[in-house]
Image (cartoon, helix red, strand yellow):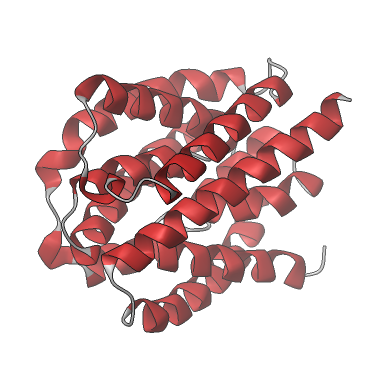
Length: 244
């Protein structure tokens, strides 16, 4: 396997993570399933961005609000643990189509609803977002889009959003990666791929940090909504092609 087949996706993943606060696994899962089984690909996609998440959490550490991530993480981790075991036993294409439809609908709604940036979600909506995020994190290593929307709705600044969402993902990666290692899904055989990807992700996040300094919360929000929509289109089209 050529090294650039991992480091370039890692760089793109780090760039996306640095600009929007989520989404590196979405980029990585375009490439990794072609060289790894789905369960292993999801695990590797969840470990490569660790350097990006830690870098950003440290950079915005002054704005971290740990109280906001406690109950979402507990629910998220519980659902993710259960769905990790489903990864090798269920047909995931229908689920990916539904996720794609949901993300496209949310992207369109938030892009054209100008008051949405500062509007906090009702508790029942937040619970649904966390549940869905945990489920797809366990299956594909992709739990970021809805969690990004949730934490964005609570934030008054770019720094507050980035600090909170990165703190959540640090906890997420530590938990789900440890769970996959102890379950035997991720082994030492995957370590070279992870390390090469981490190098790329670190470079991408550094570049994104320089760009992010010139962006405000509104611009970051728009990037988030657009990327969520593009992610939804990818999930919908790619899964529909596999089904047909």
